[in-house]
Image (cartoon, rainbow, N blue to C red):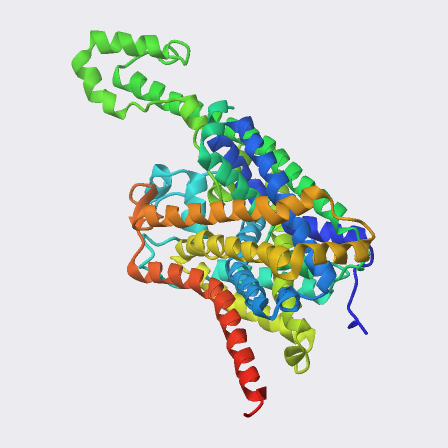
Length: 555
């Protein structure tokens, strides 16, 4: 008898859960950045190709494995082969790393949402200095949005070596974010431009990487979700739907983002010109209104030729205003979500309304992905008879949320943003590539592609066509190997790893080398998630050898 297992109320609920998980913050702040970096619309060519040869096949593979094995990641891969239990453990470890830092983004979202009800918005103007004779010096050198992010939200330290204390306001927001996650978990399964860029190999690599991580492959979430399906569910159709909707959302988000880029670039360009006009008007005692944007270049040439010595003294203070350079400034991650977008929002009519709507949307995206990620951790734990025999699901969920929240307090310290970047950059990249590579090879060559094809046919009543078989058996594994080699060589060739630190005296980010202890943490993050695959395989092999030795007949 198959073990009784909760089921989705209907297939639509399952599809929405997958979409909520896969459509996340990366669609908003990563994909537009890559489009801008690699030629705008031309980036869609490698992106769509990678969607076809990598995204949809691997998404279908994970959904099919979960639906066939009807277990979480650990149990599913152990069923395929006892030597593969480490694959499931690695997925859970990576998901746990992700849960520790990802919910901090939701905490920041709550922080900005609460401040969105103020008039004016707190990031729209610089605060006064201590003497109240002018604006804060750090804010003047940066901008009001950067100041609010780095000083008021993060209260960031000058380097990762200076940890500082826990900031109580972000810490309370983090507790609130984890409380929201826990309450949702308790409801259970039922609720839950330039065409030459095409020749640039990095454009193809980044397109493949964006597809890979945007769909959430390798975390075990998709396997966990699919394990609650009826065996007859058409997971092939759902894999295609989720993949296409995820990509459509990324493209739609890019359209919105580029309009905001243009809006912000135009404002910055006009502000720069006005500063130059004011500087020249005061320096050369020009009549107010004489110098305008239309005659600025002509007047500059005239002043330079007529008053060369005086102009040479003023020249270092004249900013080089360029709309093109403003438009070419590519930003991703928290810089896009909390600085660039808030810069645009503060200049809109009824800015409080747009701010509330934007940060509420950001919270919904983050929470959807967060719930999917915690499902990847909880499903294998609740499936385990050893754990579930002693603890109810509510207790297991509470312990996972409590431990993640406690460790996540590290990211609310003054150096927390630097540690956030370490986890964001290194906790999952190489690990997930190796995990999904082993998954694909295991299904096709250990379990057997023909056997798996027969299982799918008996479950769904549909045969597997040549496209899926060709992708699983050849194209997708080779692509993953290429990505793995690229990232490994990139880390090696980069040399000393660096990070961006906030320099309050300059009001901008500066590059610094990671200290030894930070590099050790990076190595530990990668090793602690990958090591389970060979260790568990070796452990299983040794245990089997010992059992054979114990049962061997005595001569």
